[in-house]
Image 1 (spheres, rainbow, N blue to C red):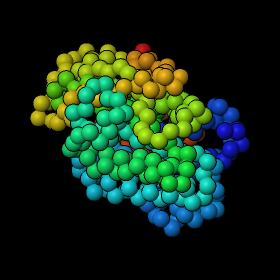
Image 2 (image 1 turned 135 degrees about the vertical axis):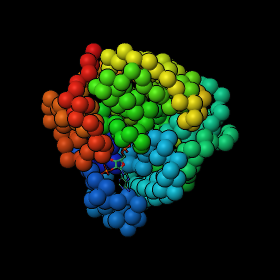
Image 3 (image 1 turned 120 degrees about the vertical axis):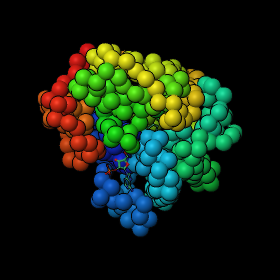
Length: 346
Ligand SMILES: NC(=O)c1ccc[n+]([C@@H]2O[C@H](COP(=O)([O-])OP(=O)(O)OC[C@H]3O[C@@H](n4cnc5c(N)ncnc54)[C@H](OP(=O)(O)O)[C@@H]3O)[C@@H](O)[C@H]2O)c1
């Protein structure tokens, strides 16, 4: 891939898309094509075809998707399957039609069966029932992988699919109901410190184990694999290490300066009991993660972007340029006391 290769980052304002853009830019790439979802709704077949015909990108990074946490996945089941099927189909098909040289499609570890043996090797895909709360999303994502495989088999397309584990880092979604686990905990503990609450209640039993990858590490892996990997089938991208939710909550409590108690709301769903990816194939390809969990969380808490994303008035710097034009992803009405407060970041 030359530094002037024309690269379309679908979903460049998202958590992953923005990280990809930062990483590629740092590596010297300059010829990006981007569209917001307002400018180009990738569910629209005709508009997507017209875009590809006009722009003719050489490389496509497909990071546009309808994404959310457990509540959003379970509530908007129709939207999660419909939107993702259309976005993927339109982008992958037009990448074939317009001769894209390489396409990287982002799947997710939730494509694996709920009770897959741990750590989950790539061979366990489609070996059992999916986790019910995010089944529509997972089915759509599996269809995206199969599209890439089928277009490779029939047309010789160099389309690859990566299955990242749970991500955290810059650009995350801090919505009180629609966020993933890490931003939800960061928000809840910071709120408790600001409001001097004695207890934080964490959803579920605290026993499920989760693997967490910093989004900047994912972006680094994507660039590495764009250059060094070209195979059909899924490829796991993770750290190969996991933690219980309780361990994560205790770490975040420490990092936010929370000194109260932590309780667990057993009435809330736990989701999959354990989700640790087998990353031996990724390691054999020569890529390892670099950012440790504690260091990554410290960096998130210290960042101006976090304060902006959470709606805090205390915002020591402007948002990063790649987030600047993006509407705030949360509609949180935080109490004034929180807006004035700034917990210790280290
Ligand atoms: N976040 C995670 O923990 C995680 C973990 C594993 C895998 N992944 C995968 O990584 C990919 C990106 O996730 P993310 O966390 O970066 O999501 P995100 O922050 O919600 O960003 C999604 C992006 O998709 C774009 N988009 C959504 N609907 C669109 C539409 N109809 N037309 C055009 N663009 C549309 C949005 O564009 P606008 O901003 O312009 O509206 C947004 O930039 C997904 O495929 C996801 O499965 C994420």
